[in-house]
Image (cartoon, rainbow, N blue to C red; front, side, top):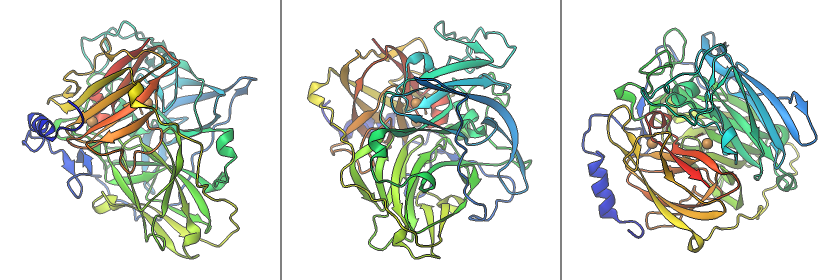
Length: 521
Ligand code: C2O
Ligand code: CU
Ligand code: CU
């Protein structure tokens, strides 16, 4: 099949149950095309939006710095924090906080992170967007067991299944990140097979920023005018705990969520850096907002309300893997789970005293707003957005060694989210890319599936019959694939031989088997 064949896709859509009433409420929100999933409601009163201040996660200090590497330590532990005012909430956090501490690295300089697990469940830490050797990539069965436990004979979440290649440790594990990649907004999160959705929902996620000389030389906003913003929806139970519809509340045996939520879990509270609908006071100058959608399943369409005079208030300078070739102005940004958009907002286009709300045009009710900025005073601003940024050399599809097709579709049941008709199995590789070669992957979907590849960053070649979409610019590691859509992406597989996963980053889909391996050689 060359390009987009609409009839084939429609047939596929019918076969996989789009619009065919398979009994799972899958679409929600406005416009029929926002998120795949079902809203889980909070069981206690929600706070007034814009009453709590925005906080920025603390930057982690290295425990040791050597000539060629910086060493960090994180303890994964349970903690009680206050997210809703006056309500204690039990979370799982890196160093007991949500989001976890921000790790700040230099491009090309090795970062070593030792994770200690004191949680009652196994964990796996993954650096999302990292160009990382397989041994440190957080393969879903490379578990860090709780201290004192012994090796499980079968894989949690997948009864009867063993992964003979899993490298399981007890109590702790050290991950080494060479970071031979450009400056970018990365993040780290749990990646345990079958339980990623539940563990991230409880708080196991944080930023990992990579800075570099090339980017530092640009006159972009920095310091307290560079704001990492982790956006995540959650729901709360009446006792203040985070509400999540796990099949197995112990999060040890059976993977996945109850049938009602198998399309994805959507919360009714929007947290930014762990605070519900916060407010930030900002001077009337340019700021860099590093937008990360760390939600399990929710997609957002983010816009400034009111827009600045003349529009185009969100000036995108970067995407998942680093800076774009040039800035791109948007009135709104559509962001799927795991995607990052690096944008410059010039609050100097507003008057001091004005309030500007980051709204979610895909939301309904409590999820229509995200964050508010209160413009304080004018200040000198020596930043600007250069017309050209470091070049993004296009990869040439004519040089591709192979074109592969990956179909992401629902087959029903607890392992029903599948790739090319197979549920995730650690022992099977869908692709064996040769190191140093370029490949084109055609990605085809039934519903919304944010498709993420480990190891590589890719460029989007097309969506349907058109070129890349408005939000597809630059180096991506996650593609917002929409219902009944075909997209083509191109990537160079390089440097590290081994087994890596690619998967849907709707975490409920991922946990219910929409994941597969590619093995580079
Ligand atoms: Cu963000 Cu495979 O993960
Ligand atoms: Cu990843
Ligand atoms: Cu999916």
